[in-house]
Image (cartoon, rainbow, N blue to C red; front, side, top):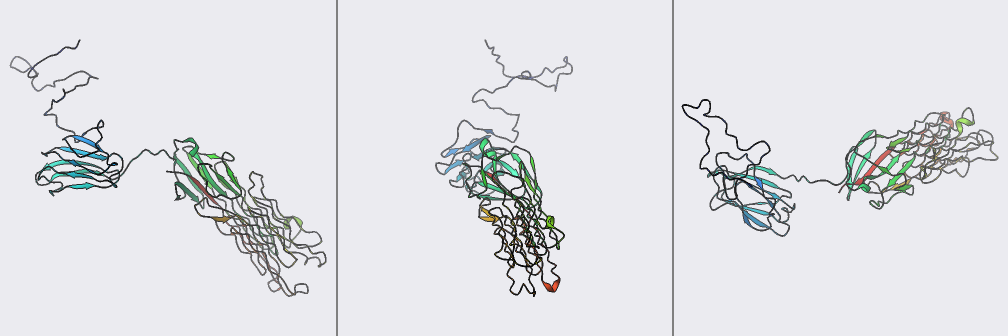
Length: 473
C-alpha cells in the first residue's frame, strides 16, 4: 500500500549547529524513479527548456485555442480552421505541425489573442505550405509572438528504393539512372516491398570498327535489357528479359558501372572489336570487328565474333570470306546478330570480285550487296522506351566499296548504309563513318579509289550505354 507524506515546505537543514548543510543539493526520488505532478498542479522555478509537450492524444480538426507549452498536430484534410493563440506573457511557447500534409490545400490560420501581435503586427497569419511546422515564443508586447522555428521541409519515411549515380531523370513513378561512361550505381536504401528491389536495365556494349579498304561493317555492341513486370511495363525491345529471367535484384551497396568504348578502325586492317559493358550480373559483349578488304589472307578478311558479328571484307571472289557470329558468348535472350559475307562475283577477275558485308545489329543480321560494286548494309538495331521515350540503338555498320576508273568499275555503286540505331555508313572513297556515341553502333567499312591508292580506313565503333530504372514513388 502506497504511503502519503503531507508537508508545506521541504528545505535543507541549515543552522548554527549544523555544519555544511546550507546550499546543499536536495534530491527527490532515486535513480530510475519518475517524479509526477498531480493533474492540475503547476510548477515554478524550474523553467522551460525551450520545447513544448506535444499533444499526441488529441489531433486537432477544428478551430481551437492553444495553451502555453503545448505542441499540436493540425489535420486540415477536412477543411481550413484556426488556431487561436493564448494570451501571451514573456517566455510562453506554442508549436503546431501539419499532420496530414494538407496546409497547401486547406490553410491553418494562426490568430493572436485580442490586440496582441504576431511578429510585430496585430493580425492573423495563415500557414499554407505542405508539411509546415512552426514554433512561436512570446517575447514582449512590442513584437508579441515571434516565430523562432519554421520548417517547410517534410521529412517522411520513404518505403521506396533510393539510389545515386549517373544522370538521373524521372518518368512517372520511375527513376532512371543513365551512364554514358564509367561510374557507380549506389543503392542507399532498399524498398520495403521486396519485389520493387528488382530493377529494370539496359546494358549496351561498345560497337566495333569497320574493316579497311573495301572492308566489312563493324558489328554492334551487345544489347541486353531487363524489365520488372508487372511492376514496370515500359515499352521494351524484342530482346527484353522479363523478370525473373536475368533479373537484377539490388541490395544496399555500391555497383561499379563499366561502359564499353567503341573499337578503332585502321587502314587496310581488320576493325577493332568493341569493349564490353557491365552492370551487376549483366555483361554485354563488344561488337565484332569488320573484316578488311585487301591484305595478307583470309584470317584478316573475316568478320570477328561479338555481341553482334562483324561483316566480312572481300578481295578474292574465288574464295570469299566469313562474317562474324553474333550473340558471342551466347546469352538468352540473344544480345545480337551475325555479320555476313559480301557479294561474290563468279566472273570478275581475282582482286576485283566482291564487296564487303554489313555488320550485324541487335535487331537483324547484316546484309550483302546485290553485286560486287555495292556494299552490304548494317543490320538494324532495336528500340526501347526504358528512358521514357523510344530510342533505337545497336545498329551494325555498313560495308565499304572501292570506286574508281578501272575497266571493271565503269559504273560503281554506293557503299553500304549503317543500320538504324547508330550504325556508321561504309565509304566508297576513304574512311567509313563512325558509329554514333552511346548507341553501341558499329563503324562503317572503309573504301578507296584509284586516285588515292585505295587507302580506305574503317570507321570507329560507337561507345555503349547503361540505363537502370526502378520505382521511386
